[in-house]
Length: 500
Image 1 (tube, rainbow, N blue to C red):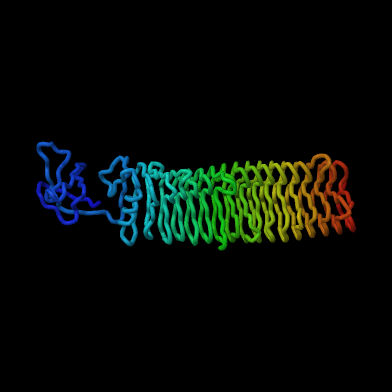
Image 2 (cartoon, rainbow, N blue to C red; image 1 turned 135 degrees about the vertical axis):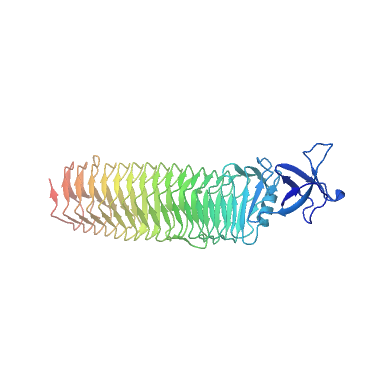
């Protein structure tokens, strides 16, 4: 509603202010309507001596409008006042009252009850609150805040509480160059934040997403590209198949999304790229105590994604799964997960400089790909093989890795061809296990320049005749329990090794 300045006593009002409530220095004046010539009565004055006011000027804020909840502390200075029922009516009225060039609607502290969506009507609009104190609630099956085909909008500092009946918390549909930041979104049945259908170049920062009942914390879907999802805290999205952050599509590839510095915990899965994704980065996230995989690039059609500097621990399955072409996994710390540490099946990809320890299965599993490099990793105290190459892997290089004190062999190669095991340090296998172990159907393997010491059985063990044309040279094999090298293979060449 417009504000007015009042002075003196009088009976005349300018056109356009009838029906309003006026405030003057904290005093409430009420329009008595046409029956009294539009005069304003000072309702807080003495009953026997009511006061009247003449309107001197009218004014209204066009670029910043405020909306008070029914229980806000100061409704006097608000442009719109809600009554606690279908409060989206007043909020949407304020948004629609902004000029075409855009502006800001500020929701004051208090509780706003929604029966339908708050809808962003144009571009260059900011909808903001006071933080946790600005609470939007609903019991209806609605999207709480929705924007479609918009750009350069900002939604910030709002607290949304849905129910098992509500839909998404905040939805961007074909929205570009926009921001969602500083919001807390709890207990939605849909996704807490849903970005889809060509929503590009958006920033989703510093939000808290908790307890999406049937969906994801933050969901990028169907051609959502160039988005930055950073510094969010996401938890308790526990429905089977859902995740703290999920990137997915059905017909359009998602690409160039950055998922960084988020805390993802106590969800069904942590961070999932469920289908074709390209040139995206997952970096510096803390992913812990999810009831399935921590981080997963799940599609073999994914290309050139980077997983860098994440801490992934205590997930109740594999720490990280990485499939696709040309993907890189660098500098991650992966420990104490209930499955393998890292499952890496990225054609022509690299797994470099990771620390992988104390996982309940294999440290690093390499399979079903070619041209991969597994380099400079520290792999120790895992409850199975340290690094296991298996499953028709070809032209794989294992170099410069340190593998020790894993519960089985430190490096195991089987059913794989043209594997190079070069310059690794493998030690401290338990009794009956080896430093480097070649098994069933591993052909044309090169084992060169490794240090294999203090292993329970052999430093290097070619286990059976189905291992063909193995070259073993320049290795230092000392202090192993049974012998330095065992050759049960076919057409092996063994020379220039140091054996005690």
